Length: 342
Image (cartoon, rainbow, N blue to C red; front, top):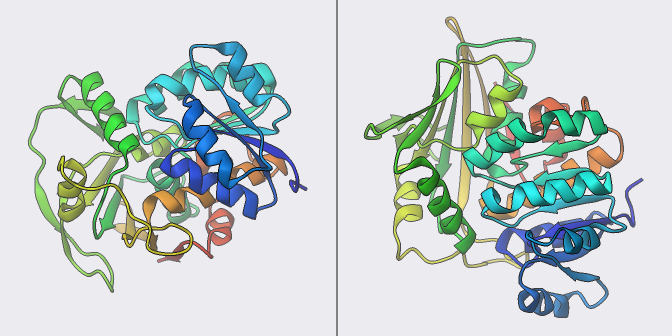
């Protein structure tokens, strides 16, 4: 049982962090509100007067240890993850508790696999990077679509977002990633990450109804290129983004998301269309829903629930598709995401 267990949410006052706090409460957990900005934490605490508030800085290990005291797990929602992931993971290892984050930063996720795999495995604990819309969901869909295949030639993940109004955190993370790449772009080909300066082509993608065919930016690379190859033998992984969404997230004047329902979700809708090919055979998985930031919360919280109830397949640093039974995990998300496998 997980009811009543405390879970520290680092970056609890952020856009995605607030969704995670609310969903933890819905699932019977007790969030501990933490993050770097004391003033923002105190504002959030007014909405949750019964919850504990513990400010913590990534440059102060003692404060991080205090933030995790008594917690059964920690969910890191504070970007840029190039700055926060390693210190919070270190604190989780000291506390002996599992760590989950919602990082979409490709290099930050790669660093987590590279730097913590051995230590987490030796400690018998679980570290799950990119347990979010980008990285986690695509990995689960590809894993489910693979079925009994042990390898495939290609995986294509097309993101059919009708729009993308980025949060402040998304913009900061994007800036950090761009700086790390020196202005280059990244793709996954021949079984490895490749940095390049090629222009990204625009092509048509045949999304299923009700979206239908859409113009997409090819090689609009997301965290799936880290999570999927961490456990699946697929040498070519391509991700695509609808041009409307790609334009919106890049434009400096695009506003931040605005809630339109009682849960605070924006009007943004999405289809994630996954095609896995082996020879002349292809398998497909499609997921649909509303608000990529809001839907990250049930992904992360379901992961916490399964880790704490022993529904995992391994230890160490692991992506969603490796750690959990993909079909069953996706079924558990049915109140939030529709999924079809072909």
